Length: 328
Image (cartoon, rainbow, N blue to C red; front, side, top):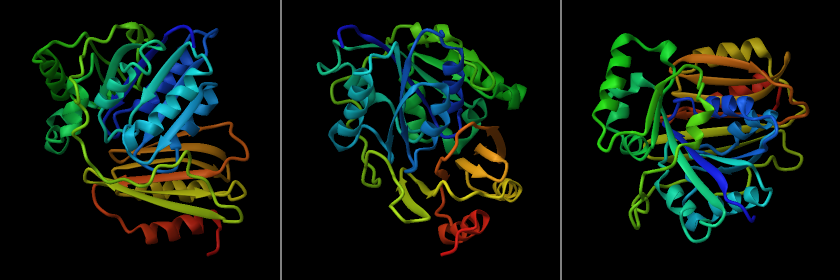
């Protein structure tokens, strides 16, 4: 690890399109470069890493809520493992329910200062959320935008003129001003923003003032031998999650699964699932379901549901078991 690796933090609240943006960056990166991605999810079953694995990036996951907890050990282990593979760039995606302050402080610490060249922290925001009290009053939502060097208004194709005007007004009012801002759709970040230098400074002990409960962190949530499926729950910061992992031998009925996802009332659903039509990634945000075919084979299906209310997980599990043909 003799040279410093350009590193970016890609942050943003639930449903802002972080994973889609990183997938776009991986697809458009220079062909001769090898990139690494450290992914943290509030949930427990590692959906984002599965989605990114097809792009040839080196992936490490820190499931379970907040990568900077537990004395920073999960995050440090993941960063060090990726740096040892000598990537040309490292992207770090903190959970949508967290903030990047402690991550920034760690990357600037003596442990990594000789190995990491911290570039711009990029925050994605759905402009529609800037007028929604539920989001605007959330401290983590505000922190993510405040500490970003670059703010990108994503999903502009789904916004109204008033949403765009509010985003532009918010950007204009920022003190100190943001280094760069842009409105995009489909997470289409321009590659050049990655090389913008980071100007946000983290004060001593900043980022240590957050406290929340989350499930015990493990290197990866795995399916126990001989089990058809497994379930893991998490909660914190006013949100609840439940994730399921199903054995690779089980296939979900595609049409019935899609129908269920269209009907579900949860605020956020992510899934990578073996279906009767092949492997597909499903993404649900603001009631909109997006579907993308994947080329994975022999893959364990993963489904994660997040909501600000505690949902009837047992009932949802019964539906999933029926769709997969699993008998309790």
